[in-house]
Length: 471
Ligand SMILES: Cc1cc2nc3c(=O)[nH]c(=O)nc-3n(C[C@H](O)[C@H](O)[C@H](O)COP(=O)(O)OP(=O)(O)OC[C@H]3O[C@@H](n4cnc5c(N)ncnc54)[C@H](O)[C@@H]3O)c2cc1C
Image 1 (cartoon, rainbow, N blue to C red):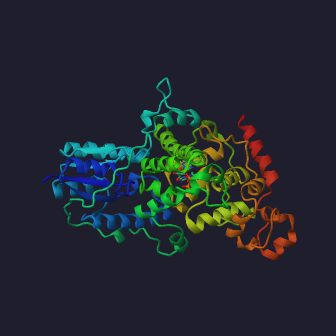
Image 2: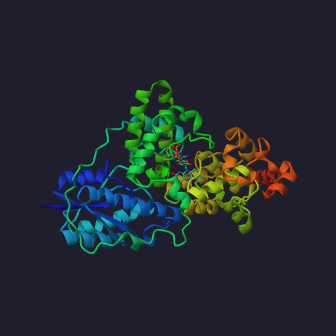
Image 3: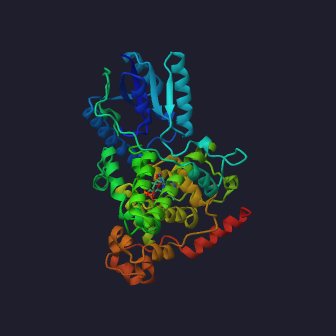
């Protein structure tokens, strides 16, 4: 009987799990292993909200494996030592894992695979985290794309989601002595701030499949129009499930295209718009793969010498707490704090306000998102911040500064979103709910703060800073 290790990382699912499938196809039984890696292996260690999610996702994965007669073994890193110990203990013939693209993880994987290969244990990395492998999507000249639209044209033409693989009802496995209990990772917060998270989310594969099923009806049909409306449930909210690999992008793309076929014309438009967003997810990983320092340095090198304002702790705290006095910004920041998630349109608005009206460095904002988002993802987060700050490739130019009042009136036209997250403004109608400072008496009555900065003055200052860069 030969045994393979399946090294679970960000593929915390059993269905459509290419590593598990490959291991079961080539070996008699498996040992499922998750290694909690130390900081040296990931300079951006998961933040508090991600750790909360990871705890529950691992718990759920262990339950699903147990239902199939297998166990999830937990070990503390370094990864090489943990894998070597586990492989020796069970006499593993090989190790299987889903390929990762973040530079530090990819470098660690190369090192680990080289060392284990020398021990006589091959490590097989298989595709599954993206719709397309980065080397498969290149320009006619064979070079990487730097602009999304042509990238997506090529990637979309290659996209052929296959029917997802379903995990077998029994997974032949063997046990490994000395595995740790989940509590040993200390992933849950000591002070329990997670009540809102528990209400908003069901981490794990079953929760992911339920969320996908909920999306595949009216929301998919209306996605192309509703996706920009934070006051509606217009998006899939699959981002944390996709980040932790509780669903593969192949499963999602396949299900979306199947549903569109059933639902008819309107849904096909929704499906294309949705696939394009999955395309942005792939493109972020693609950019990070080709620009390994993108998480920390601007893709547009001119921004290395941009005149960011000195760090302003007071302003940053007011932004973090949702107390800037600009309602849609505060609604977004409070939604983030309370649920670990924020609507994409509002992410763009709060990031624009932070980098342009407050002129704070985009990395400070990205770090706050990193700690507080349940879907915190190195590639998507860096891409989203650099895009909004204007220093990415194919980014919104720096001089395009969102006006949070007109954006609020356009995308939250009835004020429902603001009133939901900023209860001080509960009784206030549009348009005042998006600009309450127009009525100083209202601020006195409600206790809602006056704006932290003047939107017009800070916009002018940001444009002047941009000009001094030669923009
Ligand atoms: C400043 C900023 C920071 C961001 N940080 C993150 C992050 O850390 N993690 C993260 O997953 N997304 C991030 N995004 C992208 C986007 O906001 C979220 O993916 C989206 O809001 C998730 O909600 P959803 O699952 O309902 O999206 P849907 O609209 O249902 O989209 C489906 C999926 O496509 C992907 N996707 C959608 N929009 C984008 C996008 N603009 N870029 C890349 N992928 C996208 C996500 O995986 C998402 O789950 C960021 C955007 C900005 C502007």
